[in-house]
Length: 305
Image 1: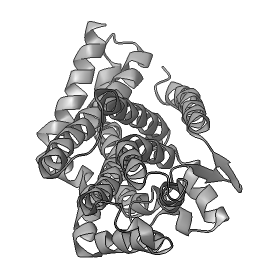
Image 2: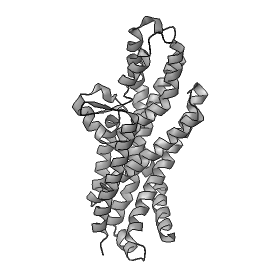
Image 3: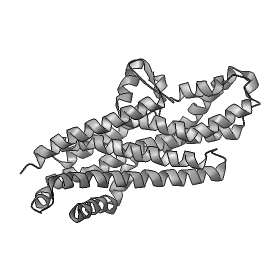
Image 4: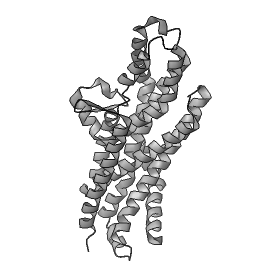
């Protein structure tokens, strides 16, 4: 166990010592934030105003500060959702680098068991992802609370951290089955560039997934990262939406909140059928189990004596 912990620590340090790698692992999150400042915020506000316009009496009932907070939290879910995808993959690039530089052969020459080598890569990636996204969530919640009221209870905050941990584990498990396909770090880097560009669309950070056709929504929701972002959106936005609903006082019978949930995707949709929170959790869990099984098969061949 000591050798496993030592190898895990080594993999964590490899990631954090490369400052440029840490920065680029957050590239999509930075892009999401930049696009939000440029035009996404106005797009989100316009969509919300369209909903309010359907019932004119709501305009005087909804606080503008609550609407600003809503758009800020929507931005936050996009930032965190993309980080839970790019950080684990970037950390797992160590697997490819070790293979390319024959470092894995040196590790295999030690008495450490093969499953411990695999688990050390998995653990290191999961820990790095949880630390990075957890840090982003902490800083963001502090900043948001300084500008307004996020209407989150202590239980809600803990649930957000739990969703992040769940998401980081699911992404790490999935990418553990992908990185063995790359033989060179340049190929891995090229794939990371594609992943960074596509992930924002898949999780709905740029455009709500609900704006796509049913077929496109199904493709997006095949990936657990999309479900994780939806779960996070439910947790982080739940308090604000409940507060707004209370402010409306039942004048619209909950129509405003329901419309917002439909527009900004609070439930995944696959093959034309909606999925509740429990269904999404089960789907992500099933994907983790399937990825772990496939990971065992792939790495048993790779590290076979």
